[in-house]
Amino acid sequence: MELANGKPQIRSGPECGLARKPPEESTCFERPCFKWYTSPWSECTKTCGVGVRMRDVKCYQGTDIVRGCDPLVKPVGRQACDLQPCPTEPPDDSCQDQPGTNCALAIKANLCGHWYYSKACCRSCRPPHS
Image 1 (tube, helix red, strand yellow):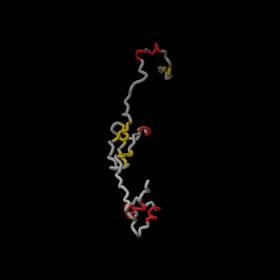
Image 2 (cartoon, rainbow, N blue to C red; image 1 turned 60 degrees about the horizontal axis):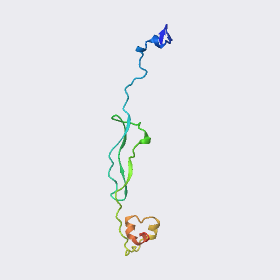
Image 3 (cartoon, rainbow, N blue to C red; image 1 turned 90 degrees about the horizontal axis):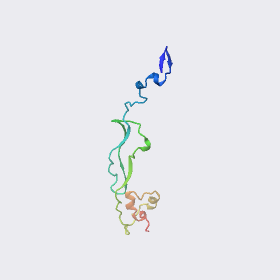
Image 4 (spheres, one colour; image 1 turned 180 degrees about the horizontal axis):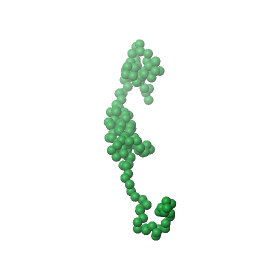
């Protein structure tokens, strides 16, 4: 195309001089890609039984922390960990509930996991024999 008397005019390929034709595409400066980076996993929150371990997950574009990474491929930042089973004490068949402790109410209120009631109501709170 060229302008003739202020109006655009279409010219054929040979009239334009194909050797001087600019490229149809060219590369340009592109910003760095968005990328997820993770820190190493933390220690498990429990030494036995099920705990949680965590890590930082951040989206970077070059050296800048940004929002723009694809959330569908975001790495997980927390996960369960289970290093080993917790030791269990064998039931003490000789244990007796402490007099004056309302163990029936402790069982109804689901208090057997509390340290006091697990000792004061050791017989009532004991799991049934299988």
